[in-house]
Length: 187
Image (spheres, rainbow, N blue to C red):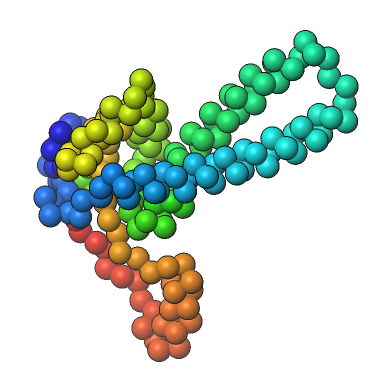
């Protein structure tokens, strides 16, 4: 479970990996990021559930159908949680919690995570918690957790401007004429 594990060779081109000196993201940073994400996920779920309950209270529902609606609500919650993580990981590499903690999810080669790989990581994240969070035990010892090992992903530190500072920098850079696209980063 080294931090430079390579993906299986699928092309004739050699695969590159993240450098050994890539900033390591520890367990506390990940826990705070997850807490923010789960707070947001549950806040949206509660508001949606209250809205659905308000609409359902208008229509008479028999007691026989209530277990069906509870099962549907549970399934929607699972799909919503998966969609949240997969969408953020595969588009920007950062959930709002990860953005707050200035970390990003990347593939083992340092590239953007594909949606399938993000889904595999989400499944691994849930499997790592059964029966206890044993899948996360290696993280404090600077090893990959089970979700990262399973999906061949890495959580890395990224130094970035806050959203407000980035918005303030754009007009300033446009006035100064220094608004240019940055060169591609190599990891």
